[in-house]
Each structure stands twice: as C-alpha cells, then as structure tokens.
Image (cartoon, rainbow, N blue to C red):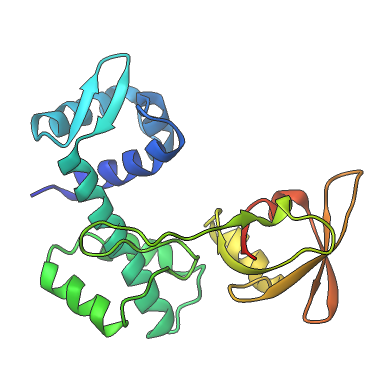
Length: 216
C-alpha cells in the first residue's frame, strides 16, 4: 500500500519517463516544486518498496511493479474525469484538481464498476487514452494541428496542454473535442494558423496550434 505522496511520485515519474528515461531528480523536483534532496529521500523509499530503480546521479526508472501502479493511478484519474464531465456536468478545465483527489481511492471494485457505468471509455475529456484494467492503452493516432498543411482537414481529438487557462481559451474559441477544422492558411511571418471551423474563419497562434491534437 502506497501513501498519497508515493502515488503522486510514481505518476509523475511515469509521465516524465515518456519524455526522458531514466528520469532525473531535478526534473521531478521541478515538477513537484520541492527540493532535490527531498526527492532523493522519496526515491530511496520507493526503491526500498521495489517500485523504482534509483541510481544516484543517473536518475530513476520505474520497475514493472511501479509502472503498473502508476498506470493504475492514471486509469483512475482519467475515469473520474470522464465521470465528472459526463455525469456531473463539470467543464473539461474544472476536472483535474478533483480527479487528483479521487485517483487515490483504493477500491478496485469501485473503479471497475465506474468503468462499466461509463461504458468503458477509451479516452478522457482531454482526449488522453484510458488504460484498461490490465494496463493496456488503446492505440490512438494523433498529429499536432501545427503539422497540418494548407487545405488539410481533421477532427480535434485531444490536447497536450491541460492547464485551466489553456482549456478555457480553447472553449472560448470553440476548439473543443469532436470539432472538424480545415487549415485555410499558415502565416509565414509567425507560424500562426488560419482555420475554417463551422464555416467561419479563426486565427490561432502557433503556440496554441502545437498543443491541439488532430485525427485525420
């Protein structure tokens, strides 16, 4: 049994390992906003529980046990986000903090009943894949909106930036999941993009475009 803090560390290491593996202590400290020495102490505890392999100055990797634990936390987090949006009418920018609390509920039966109640969703409200009870993710294919060329079309199926201000900005622009978009023009000067959405033209910055995920 892991504490809330230990589970949070495992989840953070899991997410950071997608970018770089082994994960460096400083990267974890920056993500959690704590001192590197505190991270080192926690990594030693997780290593003692055989959840991570930690070598001083070389970084940390999740063991198979640690990876499965982290994926299970991710699974619970994303299922609760679906529940909050679909059943309690939360907006997609409101669910993260609440799901951060709910993800630590230990009951396996509750999670499986929740999955069944939601009819086994494959993605969360932000388009992120939800692993099944065995830790397997659906094979989803995305491309960044910023990679599309003029006249190419696609459907918004996810975002890679989950901050509340960003999600509120997309909501205001009408750039939500399921929307069909077409690239009208790419501005050479700054890389900004002119979209055609709902028969209307919309300009967005390259910074926004690179965080919107499209399926063609």
